[in-house]
Image (cartoon, rainbow, N blue to C red; front, side, top):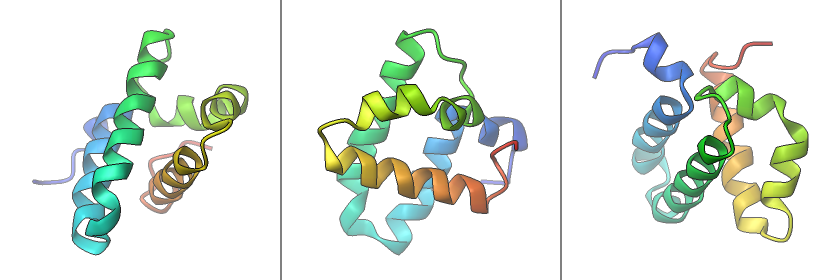
Length: 92
């Protein structure tokens, strides 16, 4: 699939692209990370968050609450946001 910067900058699009990349380099993490990121997207969007990977990354309070008490969430989220940064998807 060709790079689509509009799709990539949405939270859902970024998760989709990240998962496509992850399954090829670390397939053993794909299932668990997919569950965490799908849950993250659902909760973020339900709480009136913008469908933007940058909006999620900038809301440190919300992210802290989301990962509280669940180390697996933190690992998946940290890896996803690091990937988004490397891909240039986060606005500074």
